[in-house]
Length: 209
Image 1 (tube, rainbow, N blue to C red):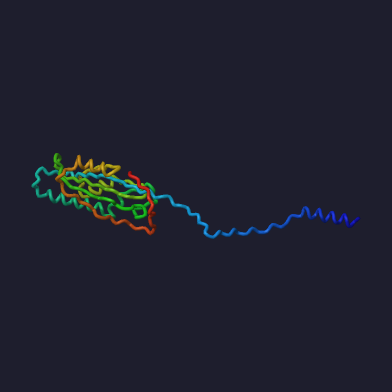
Image 2 (image 1 turned 45 degrees about the horizontal axis):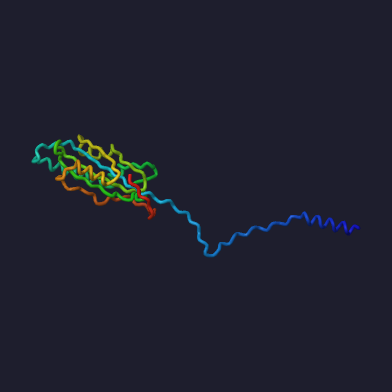
């Protein structure tokens, strides 16, 4: 009798006993399985265009005045100096304070070209300048500083700046307002930017602003 009861107890204990779980083994990577990569978002390349006009307010009613070539040369020099990195850098303002005037955010200064002329009605020496910047940021010009850049040489002068969304608008303005017989364009061939070690992505989205 006792042996049967002992057997029943043994069976009941065996039924309720919980097996000890084995530790999980790391899954082996299948051969030839492609790795999952996270794609970086495309950089948005933007093109900003400004048309700068500065009037020296220096009037020459006599085109034979010996001082006229001197004033024209001074203004031409100032236009060229605008294209120097040390002068252009403080004129540009980034909406993001972490961005800088470097190759990480500025792809290139696509164009700085200006012409100097004597107004047909005002007879004042003035300049028209195109500035085009390609960048991966959001930038604008400090208009006050741009004007002051020229007023440092021509303190009685004044200027204004327009933003144009594309080249055709700039060309149309020039066609209407700039004389055809003015001095040849003064173009800055290259503006040196501070370099960054980080390379830009090849894939870009372009945006005209």
